Structure formats: structure tokens, C-alpha cells
Length: 392
Ligand code: GLA
Image (cartoon, rainbow, N blue to C red; front, side):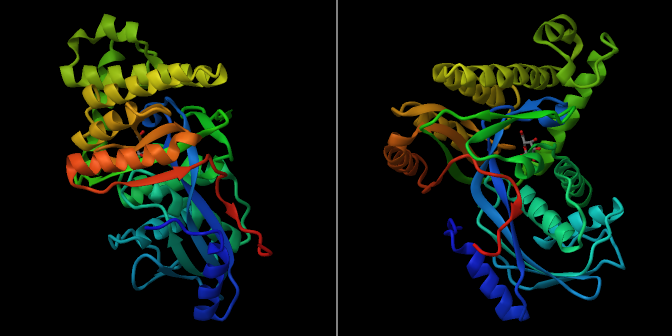
């Protein structure tokens, strides 16, 4: 899947108009990388993602009835849904994400009008860059606007997460939808996933966000993801016997874990240790960025990767290799896996002048070692969901 050039909105508009004879409105929502704070969101913890300038684009125009007629440039066929006959039936295809969001918005009391929709995705699917949150947020935003409903971003993020949890069936946290709504150019976002308090953290000048795709997708990923959540819940449940005020792993320190963790099954102990230590690393990383202490940022990213590999066990050989290859290259500030894991991408903070060299060295070495050609995506931190000005 290629990067789409800046004439994308105009091209999409033309293709939509050719099909429907009307000029659509155009919206887009970004994918994301997470700099640090992995598998902490559903533990009420901290995350530090940034939106990237790879988007899901949506062209939309109103219909007189209450039908959603959905097409995608990435998949064949027309998917039609009658909003007046809601059902929980998944078709196991891309349109589930859109319909799941529409259904969730309606159930939250937001009455939607019918719409012709054309989606164009440029975020690689299954690469851990959050293409699913991007299609949810882009279409949710577009459908609300198309129906004359006000959009409140935090509410939209929560409803898109709910759609993914209940309709698509993955118990994901709030991070991906939230950053797709709240991304800001040049900044990462520190989010407290309990209170949803957030603030933007400027990224040092001269650094690029480089995502390296291992090209590995692990089929087990969503089952393993839900299992990790259950293990965390078990940890909370057992530790709350000693510390009744504890509601989530967010409420614990490593000292608590050392003191009361002896009775935990060893796997659960390690899952808890990852989440508790990762929460501290997020806050330390924000401080290190503020101090312009890039060595500390790199060390925290390396610790995060090790913890995900050894304690949380969501890495894989290809992600470990990709991190190892990047770590030795001049210009690399930090490298770690990003997103849910079991394949997908690493995130690398790379000094801009070194990005070309980084790219060719990593691609070549990864190819030699695995026989696979990786895709490498370079981005700055981007803005969240929005409408494209029709004059553009
Ligand atoms: C996936 C989920 C997020 C988050 C990450 C791991 O991307 O969608 O909610 O849990 O995994 O940090």
C-alpha cells in the first residue's frame, strides 16, 4: 500500500463524483505510532503516541434514505446497511468497522442520516499502525458531520473504541482512537488513560518517526491480546486482596509488587511487572524529552522493548531483529516494537539527516537475515481527524 500524494482529496472527490454525480465532503484520520507506553492503556495507565501522516480518507455525501452505501478503494464490492434495521451481524470484512461505528453512534443517541461513502486507506493493514482506529474515527467523524451532528472528539474516540470492543470483538484500549482524534503536528500526546487528561509533548526538532514493518502478521494476535488483558485483571484481583484500594495496575508500584506479588502465578507476576514499569517509563520519557536528553529517551525505549519481549511476551523474533539492527546505526535515538505486537512495526526515532542511510542499512540487513523485504515509513507527528477544506 503506497503513500498517497497530496492530491489525494481531489482525486477521491473526482472518483466519487464520477460514481454518484455529486461532490462529496472529504475527511481523513491518521494512523499512529506509540513512542512508549505499550499495553498500558487498558490498565488505566499512560501512553505517548503520535499521529503519523498516513491516513484513512473518506468521501461522503448525504442520501435521502437511512441507508449506508459503503465502498472502499482497497476492497471490491458495495456494502449496504439499513440504519432502520440495526443488527449485530458481522460480515467479517472491512465494512464491519464502519457499520460498527454507525451502530454505536446511533445507540449513543446520535441519529445518523443515510450516506454514500467511499473509503481510501493508505495505512498498511495489520502492521500495528492503527489502520482500524483510523477507519473508525474517519468514518465516525464523517457520518456525524454528514448528519449535522456536533462532533466531540473525546466522545468520538470512546464510541469508536466501544465499537471495536463490542462489534469487532477486540478488547483494545483507548490509545489508538484517542490519538487519531487528538494528534497534533510536531507533537506526541501524553495521555492518562484513566482520566483522559492529556497534553501535547513537543518532539525535538530534527527527529523523524520511522516505522519499520517486519512484514509479519501473527494470526493469534487478537486472542493473545485478550489473554494479556485477562492476565492483568487476574493480577489486579489478587493484589487487591492485600491493597483494597487498587482498581487497576496503574495503582501499583514495583515495591507493592515485590511486597505482595509472591502469591501470583509467575506469568501474571511478569505481566504486572511490565505494566507497572512501563507506566514509569512513559513519565520518565516525557521528562527526558523536555530535558532534551535523547540518550535517556533511547535507553527507556530499549528497556520498554526488553520488558515487552521478556515480561509481557508480545514481541517476536522479527521485531527483536528489527530493533537490534536499528540500534547499532548512527543517527538512531531509540528503537522498540510499537502497537499490540506479535509482528507489525518497530518505531525508531532517527535524526533526520541519517534517515536515508538508516533506511537502506536496515532494509538490506533485514532482507539478508530473513529473506523478507521490509517496508519502511518515514513521518513527522501529524494532526488528528478533520475535514479537508473543499478549496484545497
Ligand atoms: C493495540 C490496541 C491499543 C493498545 C496497544 C498496545 O494497538 O489497539 O489499545 O493496547 O495495542 O499498547
